Image 1 (tube, each protein chain N blue to C red):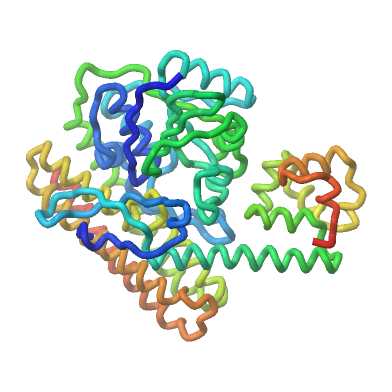
Image 2: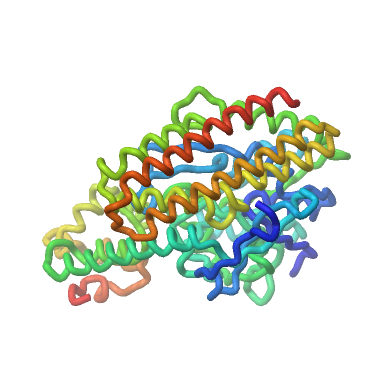
Length: 333
Length: 133
């Protein structure tokens, strides 16, 4: 069976799945809208956790939480299920497809055959929609892909039961109840307030303070970890910022797109101005990536020590600008 | 970022005919999307990360040949895993997996345990035990 599901490519998988599922159910919302209302924007440094042998920074809220917040704020109910048994997980998915209900799935990337090899890491918070089954293969709408694709039963089971951090455990989710009309206005305000609160949080590893913390660490790395490791760490920061799914500039451009859309909807000119400002901040994140890449271009570049100070300064500059920005944004609504 | 500034550099995405979506502004300052084939700063970062993994793999291979570690460590690196990931795939505590990296301990493992590892790496027990990698 095949459900008539419209695939639209998105920058980020979770927003994309939500936007596509909403469209399927007759409510057109854009990816930036989902991201903004769900308060997706963030910066956080996660100490004690290492991925690919390097520290982890994140430019977005925790996997799954964007949809949860979005649903709560616009008044949708979602059903989520996780499974300990692969067979039950499969049966439940098939039942939903029988009922003509496309479902969102959390999966691991490592065993996704259609991803380029270089991108297959043990990252378990990827999202996709399954919208049908044909000749024993599942029809897949993966929002980061240009077109739809398919996976065999075995392949899908493997990615649904990937192990490690954020193990999906066959996680499926789909909206079950909708309001008559989506009330975006209030939801937008809630979403923005939440993001401002997060970014200005008095926690040393979150938001603006988190950026400053990372800048400080970057200054220390060449001495404390050696150039090679420092370069590896710096490369990972840029990868988290620019890798597939961020829409560029560590989600700052998607957020600017959201502010523009929200400004028009709420007829709030201040938001339109702030959207422009966020775009410029996004550009500065891109500049940081360019400067950082000059350092790690040569993996054991020993002349780079003072360049670390330079990129750290760029980050501190961004932190200052974001601090001013989110204070203004808080007042603008 | 302006729409015409969205980078179109060569990258590893090309081989898979894969383009990613970026958000950018058009000439009127309106937000829109544009596909990108890749961007050098992140391609370099990705390539470095892969190079680092390959180094880890070849270093581990050497350790296996020198009988310093069991082949388990090599296969873990080959599958881009680390200890917590491997432990959760086989369903064995981390400290036990770590112990199994010791050649002497690895030699004494029973078939049931070996099979668990072999399944994770999608190879046979015989392949798993080979040290001439």
